[in-house]
Length: 291
Figure 1 (cartoon, rainbow, N blue to C red):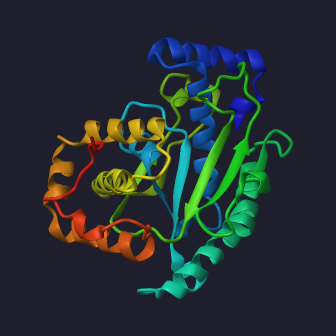
Figure 2: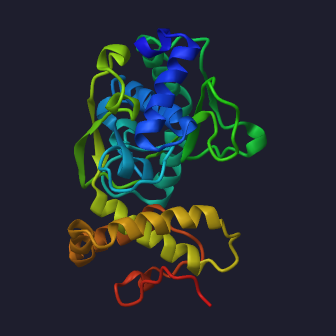
């Protein structure tokens, strides 16, 4: 990591220059660099062939479909790595969740630390932590890992100085594709200063992410007693608005096989109490808040 070898002032200068060119906040540019480094570490490690990149951050980092800053890394773990394949029973799903949480807490945690050091991130510079017990981390998936880094800038409430990694083994695998990843800094700063190469990662296709976000919002509004997270919902609405008129999104709605596959998978592997999955039909899907 040649950029880390620069002085704090030199690194701030490169971030400030990038902010002037892109119009982005300095804290966001800095965090994007760390998100990129963590992604590189994850997808060059020993489990690189067993994980997929998914979620809102993949929409911005891989496909340039949204303009909001996305800072979390959502991962799919291919469950055959843990010895689970085919359609699972409810009992097997419960065991899978525990096995995936153990994997994230041990094997993935260790691999991530090793690869960050291999990339030239000094082991004392960042801390890698599991969600603390006081935050009621579940013994099941999804398990959360935090990579905390020292920021060059004062704290702000809306951009934490950490990269949050969330891994689940209950997600669908297909469809996914390969995409290229680079940092925002690398698009502005002299390559000789950064010495960073573009790298590829396997990522869930946007058409699937689009449908999953629709179903997520539909389910949220069915759970009338659930505490509402307006900020979280606004992010999903933004993402849907950005994608809804694009050809792949229109085609996704019309793709009966993909549509039903996702609904069936959600009902079997991520079933939520109080949700009537028969209402996931195109004719009854509802993503507007009830009156």
